[in-house]
Structure formats: C-alpha cells, structure tokens
Image (cartoon, rainbow, N blue to C red; front, side, top):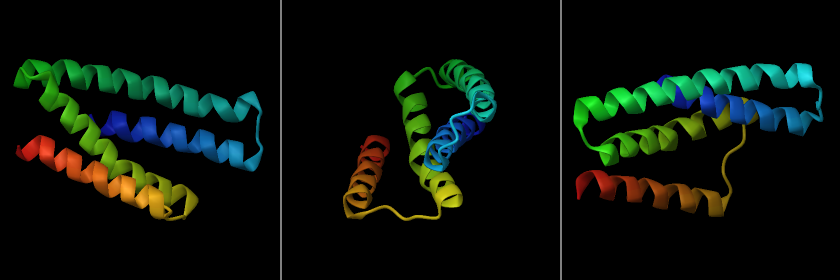
Length: 105
C-alpha cells in the first residue's frame, strides 16, 4: 500500500510541477500517467489483500489515509522545497489528530 500511495502522490505532485513549469506537452505528461496506473494497481491489490488479512475495511482505509498523511508532505517538500502556510499547517495537524482518534478510539 505504501508503494502505491507513494507512486500516486509522486505522480500528482509531478503533474503539478509540470503545470508550474508551464510544460503542457503530452510527452512530459506520459510518465505521471503510467506511474498513476501502476499506483492504482498497487492500491487495488493492497485493499484486496488488506481486507482479506484484517476483515475490516475501515482499518484498511485508516492505514491508507494515514500513509497519505505521512507521505504527502515529504514528497511535496522534496519536489517543491516549500513548507505549508498557516491554514494548511492547521489543517494538517487537525487531520493527524483525526487519524489518531480513529486508531485509538
């Protein structure tokens, strides 16, 4: 699941980086599309296997969303080298608290 989430996030952020650079060519857009297809296959397999192993779709979903919560800021910082603004940081912290509440309660 982590590989799928990472590939999905990376392809989304690369697409945003292409938009920032003004590169609208199809050749530059092919790599993120192929990577997103691979990520989708990884995520579908992870959900399938996760549900078979755990038997609870909510636990599988919490793992998926938590991995997004942890991986996305790292990938965004690595590609854009920018930190979140005040509102985004507050939203990130509230999201993290929500994930903790889901896991612990």
